[in-house]
Image (cartoon, rainbow, N blue to C red; front, top):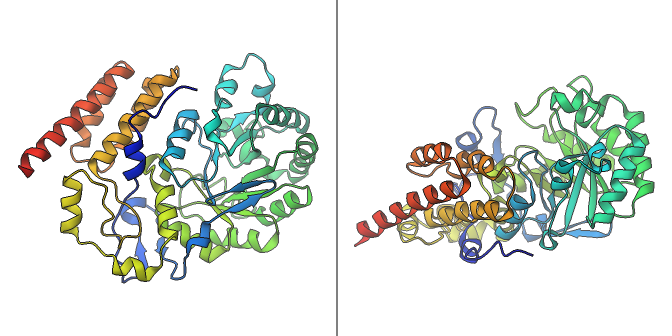
Length: 413
């Protein structure tokens, strides 16, 4: 296996971090991060290390009980290993992959989606399709490739997927879903799971019925994105639907939707009783989120209050290039600018070494996420977008951050 993580150990050791909280308040709005439609974050007053310690899905133990959601164009092998190396993520998943494509020997995209390395275990392959026998055969292939779990996508709202009766398009056809469940369950011995939305729209909520069907057909866990297909990614996730599913079945339930900070993960578990949390769109913007959750669940609220660090001290630590547990009451690490530099450089280097055909496009795609909150980040993003090749982009990143590091050092002197 290639060595992707040369010089990355320091970043993994010191990386996690994020935002401030007022430790003497139980409720803090998340609009600063979430934007339109954000829910108030309910900070769980009784969280503990056991809150998201682990969950067993069939024969596989997921520890911690946190899952990187499958995301088209995002969760390729480079991003999955990047997240895994930062720590705190119990299960990673592939991009959703066409079952028909898996069966076509010449489908290079499907092959690339299902490519993984030994250090990615435990890993789940997510498939989509509407033909039970095609789904079953694709699942057999996935098992043969060495995946630990296989997952059925019933959540994707994209029109091109829905019009082929895939993703959330199947939510209006529970009998067909049942046929897929039964065919795949018979075809594989690895744990079989499903990720779905609450329903097509507010008038067609099927999440409880669908979860019961999954349990009856022998699936090992269900993951609910608590929005409808009609919602897309707008508005608030309805966590009460996750609670309803948890009340209805005995198999593990994974909650998904509106987890933007560690407090949100704890609040979801506290309010729904779900067994694990799944994080999607927050991960590219804040790759440290999983480790932050692990840190946040590992301390008591009292420890957080006693460990409060001032803004002044936190700023001094960041200026010195150290990772600071700051202004979160020692609840979880805040990344320094040098951490962020190391993170961006490491991910971009991994893309180059993996020799992905779209490495340059990936770098430009992730530039906005990774440079969010970086002073002067707009100039870096422009330099990245104007670059023509992946190595040039890496040079622009190094020049930008090295100049800032030199300036900070001059100020200290």
